[in-house]
Image 1 (cartoon, rainbow, N blue to C red):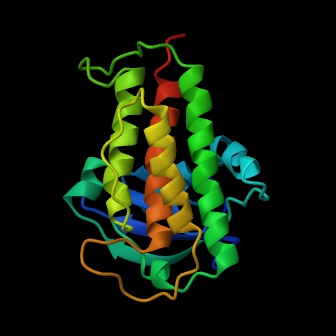
Image 2: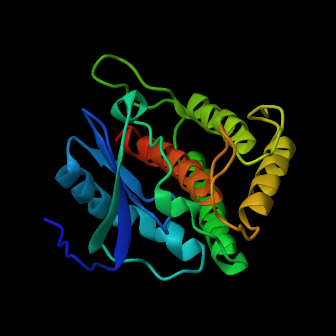
Image 3: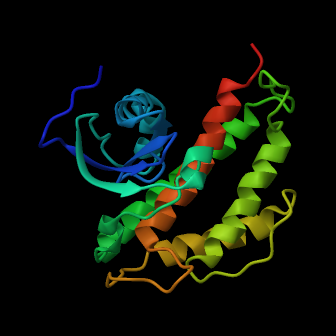
Length: 221
C-alpha cells in the first residue's frame, strides 16, 4: 500500500462523489485516478506513477513522489460517479507565474506526445468490454480531439471541431491551447462556464492520458 503522511511531497485533492472518488495531483496535469473510495483513489494514483513518469520526463521535469498530502476535498456530482474529473479545486484559483504556467503547458504538450506515440503503436481494433462496449482506436482518438475543441472554449479559444485527418487544424487548436495555458494568471474567480487555467491543464491532460492508457490496456495480446 502506498505510504501517506501529513506532510507529503505531492499535494493532491479529492473529488468525492457518492460512488466514485478522484484523486488528482495538483501540480501534475494528467496524473489523476479514481477509485470507489478515498483510499482506493489514492492507491490508484500511486499505481499509475510509473505510467505517468514518461510524460514528466518528456516535459523535462523530475518525477514526483507517491507520498501524498491531501490538501482539499471537494464534493463531486453525477459526472464524478460516471468517471469524469469534473471540478476545479480552490487551489486552482491561485495566481500562476509565467514559469508555473509554462510548466503546466509543457506537461499538457508531453501528454499529447505520449498519446500520439501510443496511437501509433495501437492496432485499429481493440478488445471489447464484458458487454461488448468501448471505442476502437480511431474513434477514441477522434473523441479526444473533439473534446479538446470543447475544452478550449473554457479558456477562451474557439476552433471548429477538427477532423481527425486534419492534422493542420489539430495542430492549430493545440498551439492556441498551449499559448493560453502558458500565460501568467492573476488568480481569482473565472466567469461562469470558464475554467481556471490550472484546472484546464489538468482536465485536458487527464482526458488525453486516460484514453491513451485505455488503448494500452485494451490492445489485444
